[in-house]
Amino acid sequence: MTPNQGLCSDEFIGPFGRPAGLGAYVCGANRLGEYSEITGVYQKHLTKKGMKLNLHRDNFPSNPRTKKQQAWRDLFRSAMTAWKALDIETKQAYNKRVYPPGQPGQNRFIKEYIKAHR
Image (cartoon, rainbow, N blue to C red; front, top):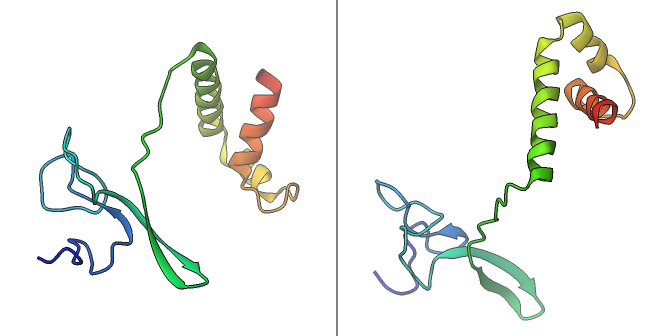
């Protein structure tokens, strides 16, 4: 394989690397603890001189599990449980409401539930 050839395609576009588990090559990540200079997310950008290929390193966001974060997660979990407990007629009433436009009834219900219970 030449340096210009990728395992996912001939152009390095999108995530690239080996999987963290078993199996063949998967576009996305490295094995645990492995370092490779070609692993990351490749993006094409149109410039005045033509297409430019940029490599961005993988980003693994942190999950600090603070008390405030856990409280919001518990509130959202209780809102979802309340939505699932509603009868079909009530859910249809939320789905038929017009405001805000384009918002599903479940989102409307969760928004109102969180405002009422925080």
